[in-house]
Each structure stands twice: as structure tokens, then as C-alpha cells.
Length: 156
Image (cartoon, rainbow, N blue to C red; front, side, top):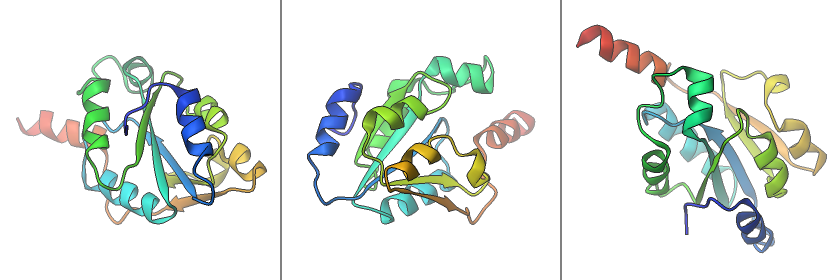
């Protein structure tokens, strides 16, 4: 099952994947755009299994404002789960994925987009303390869901 909502069950499943490198990335993934696809495919290329943490609707509203998300969590999870490069998707209610990363306890590689400074990446210390590493991926374009929404509103 690609979509999980049970952290302990996913942690057990990942623990059973001996010898496989687990990659983790996270985000809102509200309006899926080429930057998201580029990031997810790159993240998957860094290991054997890709776990994608997805902010739930309440955390998106706290982070992005009352008009977001455009698509509810169930639909965002479904779209991500349909991607071949994604092995597991799991929502989280917190504003950051820190607790999720701690609970999964099996993240070997943490991947974030190039707009993050390494020191600012949540979960980095936990992953590195377990012998994992952080990878910052520089996107080829200047993609932004918020920018895309603004462009749609402006043009239509």
C-alpha cells in the first residue's frame, strides 16, 4: 500500500527493508508542477525507496494561509501515490516533518529543494545522527505553487 496514515506501521515496513536505502522528502504538493516531479524523481534516484511526507490540510492553512490548500489531503496523496517514483506517501499534521522523521527512524537520505540552506533543513540533525545524509537538490527552473496560483488569479 503506497498511502499510509499509520506511522508505526510504515516504520515497521521500512525496518523490514534491510539493505535498502530509504529516501525522504516532504512538502505540501498542492498544485503538482514540473519542479515537484523533478524533485521527486531526483529523490528516488538517491536510494531504493522514496517516502514522501505531505502536510495535512490544517498545517497547510497555518503555513500558506486560509485559501490553501487548493486540493484536499486525500486528493494530494492520491496524485503522489500514482507517481512511479514514489513508494510511500504519509501525511503529517505538524508544521514540520520532524516528528515523522523521528518516528520512521529509517531515513538514510533526506532530500530538499535547492531553496533551503542545509542548516535550515528540519530533520537534518536526526538523519545525520543515524549515519544518514542530507542532499540539497537544485531545481532547473523557478517553480512555485504559490507563484502559479498568483499567475492564474492575475490572468483569469
